[in-house]
Image (cartoon, chains in turn red, green):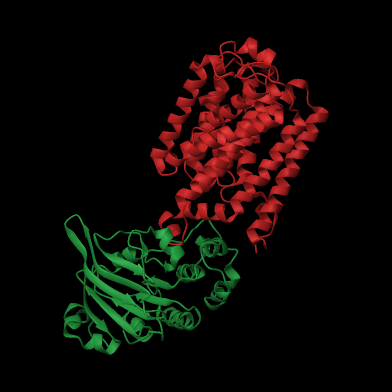
Length: 341
Length: 248
């Protein structure tokens, strides 16, 4: 099959983003402290979340607020499969269905986690993709609340707010960089694929696209499930690095943080997702440092707790007010470099 | 049924039987029975509010009729959705443009191509309608006339059995309208599809179409060759009467 012009450009753009991701990873390996490495690792996890979000939101232009729940489903499913039996006997003494009586290798566990998350996404998606606008947004918020409640109150399986520990720490910064690069290619590939182009056409003009043979419900479902699978990858990577998970990180704060990243960078492009993630991740670290009341050029700044939350909210409001399409708008990275013909 | 009929073709391409459509208590389309043959070029005229666009929406599946049946090549499509009908060969353009502004011109055409039957026609149509140099541009950067032409090329890229053009010359000047007429003559010869053209510009319709259907108040009041139609007293009262100095 021959590639279209935009698909060729897509490969170029994905290669450029991959180069940036690898460069940041290499620099971090050589120069970052242990603490900074953890921050950079979590930025990469968030990048995969934001890319997963972009696949659905950027192409269908429906808002999803349930993404952290799908990340959590992936993380918990993998954690339950992979944690050694001895650890699970301690962590989950009352687990039903013999969940604490088996353990699998990390790869099999990840595959099972992907299948489970994909199946849940498919079931939920059948309803979501038939809704429009506000209806879809509110429904996804409901999914987030339902999943969080289950994590929180089925303590025999998920341990709720307590730590689910003992997950083998098989992931390193190298693993997450490789995963992020693969996801960038998948997400950009989808955007320029026939499915992605048709889905974007339906977002531009649903009636017009239907008249051109576009089955919008089917395409939205495909994007939704792909999004769920990428979010599961992020969850698995999170669990496999930290070795400990709990319900809290897969709830509203994380939804809001990653949404701010996507909105700021620009949800319509993969480049926007990458830019937004790194810009907000870095910006937040600066703000967290300011929160503690540091001394700058001899001036002792006051302690401002909660500044990061305020700033995150402001970023969303200002982006929505001043540039609703985000920093990148409709432009991908290669379009900034290539001359306009 | 004599004109445009191919030898051996026994079923009509597109057939509407007893189509009604009401919105609330208002009958927008009343008992329309209409058939279009393979390769035919049919015009649809009628005064404002006659129900022309509603009829096209019913044919393309954006609306479902209150009563009546629609068949394409003998197959009932009355309950089929718009995207299914597009894939079966009913393409259309819109009076109020419905291009995809965030996609390039080429991608706009690709969307239809993905659902279509392939072949070289889309590429030829790009040249014929003068869009070759504009393929990489975002569709919303095109001039109004080019956007109209893009919609036609996009419709052709579906490789349809029938292409319905809803006021293709709207907003075009005389020169552009003439060029459009020439391009549509090319479509007639090369595209192997029937055309169903709706327009206000009577001269345009009269020169392009071999048969014309006249709609008024949601019902068909006349059908025939351009000469028949212009001489029909009902048509003159309903429609042509408004147009002083008509020379068709």
